[in-house]
Image (cartoon, rainbow, N blue to C red):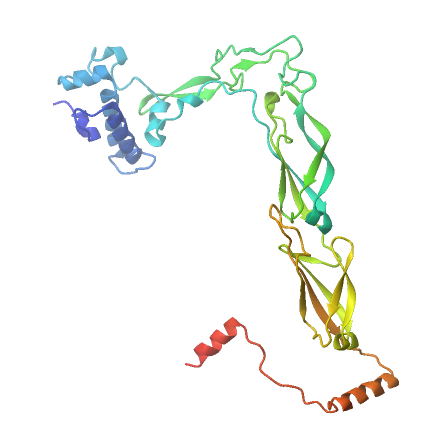
Length: 380
């Protein structure tokens, strides 16, 4: 009794070609010896292959439907008889990955897009905040001036490969338990291009591009920070065969500033004042990132550690309107060296304020969120 190949694939007798192929792919993935090491996997995989070979071939399928042996001598001869016929590698790959992409077959193009390029650029905080323009020297691949990207000497041109006849690939046949397995490989003579260049350009050796140093102008927008990348479209590497260039990326690194530290769009600095100025109050000229000064009013009685905010005096926001703030922390400096006259004056001040022998205020240290949680759980 002949094998019921419909039952082998688990499909009905009126299954469509797509349903047959789908069932074959599923079972082939399940029983392929590379993924299934059970004792009957090898036999099952061969049986699945025979079933698909029959049901995917109209002539063999007709013989099978009529109760005949599709592998008998003369049966379905139009498609080749017996399981020993050539079984393409594409059929196997289809079983695991679906359609292998016939559109990708054929010669690969000589002309391809170039790679992107990345160069670092160090700028100061003022340039990062308000933007700047720089001239940069870059070494990249550019279009060959001799052959204009063709890769061939003047008066010559690429010719069809005599090995693959322009297909860009050759067939390699190997015997296996499936029969003859054919694989397609890039042609080693033309490297998959389908054409060869008998007389390559002397300048670029047939690549269509050469290395060169050139100058590019980059405009840095205001608000950039360390790690920001500025894209210059079409300023990267020219592609092989004179292909379109990639992009050039300029990665910003901002140098530390002697006065300001940056936190997002805000700027921070500290101002150190003598004790008398903090007690009596004063006005100081505070430097700004623009290179100017702005008056900063210190109110009488200002305590050490007080933070004062100057609104919209920070860094302009990148790609948004407005600016961050300038936050100034006041540090009150207690004198360490005073003469006798100054000591006398301070004693008079202490006596006038009733602070000759101050006891100070002793209280618990400020606890953060985790400290309060620890105390709460410890109380139970």
